[in-house]
Image: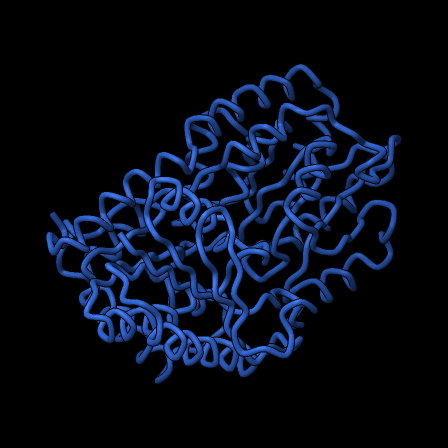
Amino acid sequence: MRVLIVSQYFEPEVTAASLRLAPIAAGLAERGHQVEVLCEVPNHPRGVVEDDFRGRLVVKRSSDGYQVRHVWVRASPSKGARARLTSYGTFAAGALTVGSAIKRPDVVFASSPPLSVGVAGALLAARHRAPLVLDVRDLWPQIALALGEIEPGRVATIAERVERSLYRRAAAVTTPTEPFRRHIAALAGDAAKVHLLPNGTTREWLAAGERPADRERAGLPADRFVWTYAGNLGLSQDLEVAIAAARMLGDGFQLLLLGDGSSRARLEQLAADLAGREVLFRDLVPVAEAMLVMRASDALLVSLTDLPELGRTVPVKLYDSCAIGRPVIVAAPGEARRLAEHAGAAVVVEPGDPAGLAEAVRALRADPERAERLVAAGREFAIANLRDAGVDGLERVLAQSASGEGSA
């Protein structure tokens, strides 16, 4: 089976999309399928195209048995709405142009958000007379409205119509959580074609959790309890609360924020008087280096803003943090909280509560035995949620769609 994967974000960018889709591409290739990925030239989150990808409209490379075509986008360090929409639009146009010229795929697998990727995937599916399988990692425009990225009005109304049209146009839809599945099924008009494709971790993360923690190599202070957040520093992560908790903890503790995103500058200003001591910022690093730092940390944070829309999602970092073998603190609503509590895999605190978060960090430092119990439960949770299992289910969905069985 020839599978064309369309996603704005992909490796070597470190994003939720790449962490979800790279194991899928590799898993399908390992099962004997011919897989090709269309994605942007890497520039996220800084908005600056990496050196090896500059000056070319298309960059081809091979990875783990599949092919990747990185197409040019108009990248910008600006985090404003216009810059984002320009990036989305230029990628959709580039993907459509490049994807129209490749050998006909048996199925197109397009991963959204942004919603423009779904549109490009639908047009490519029509161009090649191939079925579209739409992967919905997050609900858009609902999330954008909740976070204030777009205002209610004409743009939001158009986006909602496009969303509904894509769900109905697709031969099948995959999504990571049950609340997402219910929302999509209601709009698609056919619940049978909406399939769960949960996030999870990989064997690489589990293997990293078995290595000795190397505090010195990770560059972490030996005299502080380091609790680390690794990932996107954006609107939905509510990291202002973590900084407030770090202020309450004071000397002897250090919050490490490892990553980049639209909120970083504002967070740095908020923590200016704590910089280098109670709060430390580090730039985004490759996954292997992030594993090293997370493994050497004393605890890991999974944080989401307390919004009903975000309560439907489960961050990939929950699974990877549990796999790496460190105690995890979850300050998130909804599904992420429910899963962590059910598995006993993390300390769960109310989102938006800096005092509660600070107390959870103190308690972990004071009770190493409890921390070890959390590590053991977290590892069991991670092992039970490997992305490999999801590839088997996706393979069936893709094969059924390619054969014309649709939602069978």
